[in-house]
Length: 554
Image 1 (cartoon, rainbow, N blue to C red):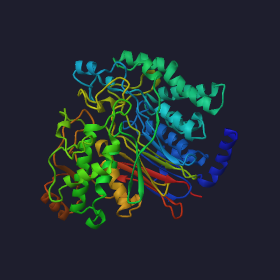
Image 2: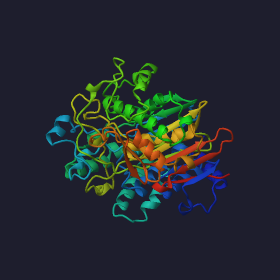
Image 3: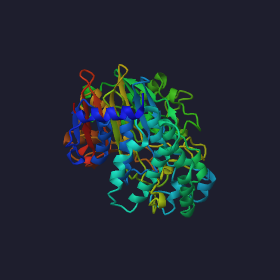
Image 4: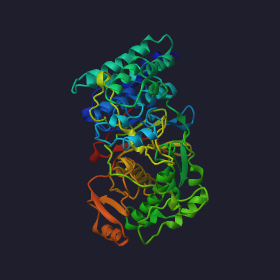
């Protein structure tokens, strides 16, 4: 069937699903309905996704529109030269797939080079364009459209072009010009829709835009080159999955931190969390202690599986889980970093420790979850903050500093190497029950992302909370791990809780030995649920974190 015909029919149908009065200013932090749903950061990005769903686009089409809009509306937390891990349940294939959406280290970014300059430049360092990975967003979006979408690149970037044309920042016109050049590439392609999409990626990564970016990198003493862009590819990968209480939880692979959430769930299967009570001292304690064990394995074994062998099957096995679970002391908080030994099936392997470096905080991230009327569902976590002094040059393509999530420890699975993906914190989540998608979660917040994702899952599975309840419930987090940004040292025994936590809970946690800190907010989640009894969509984003959500109504 002709793609343009499908688009026009979808547009006509969309008029039924979306009132004409729908505007970004009307979008709140929660919504429910049955025509499709979006939750993200800025309300204008949510409106972009709703617009595409209205026009008959799939969840992938809408997610692409949201991602492009977020690169402008949430700039500072995400930039178009950054990265976007992307999980999708695709109805046609009947399964979950992962699009990597993460750029690699440049060919010039060798271990010897970074050791020679004193390490990978940190956030705020004037030389941190040397910390930029290959920009992954454009090819991620093209791949999502080609594999799961029905619309064109031109269709999906109309919302962001309107935002850019408002001209509020000096780089807006530059980026708008680059995007319109990509539209030209699509329109001038001699083939059909797929060929046109491929032309978009080719012009950016292998055409004149790549040449202009190369000039910009050299001028600002960056390490990326046209050759690095030309070799970039968005990998389509199998997800990591575990079953928990009748639900199947899907994460990206060990080039993200995602599988440690899977490990934590395996450990928690042995405890009756519901009986402990939501946010009781016993509940917070057991979840925190399980997180500490899984994080220790993350820091010891995770890295880009295209470069290193990560023993995920062993880490998630029954045998290993049963060895590790007894390390959780129900009466006392741990002050040790205790990775296990999945190779020899031993509960502890202290020789896997590496020396942490200086403290570093992330500049945050943003969020995106989408469901359409056909049952497709997307969870994506866009990130990448502009490098120091990087206003994108003539292209308007700003770059992140994601390579600070690599390290310079020889022999470590996450040690830097040309062409290698850093082990990132970005970690969207999809959940299926009975083979059908039921939850999508995306969280901004560095090392806290999967700690909060875990709590949202437990809020839903163990305590029957809807998204609006889960994203606003008090949360907790530990820094008892090596930081993912420049490898900051662990804060042994630390536990951060919400300021409004009751005194009884505080006293109980202190008695268990936790070193308490207090916060007004921990991370920034969005959550989308499909009710399997009636197909109703419930979607919400934490209003404390400026998250927004909307649905289409029949």
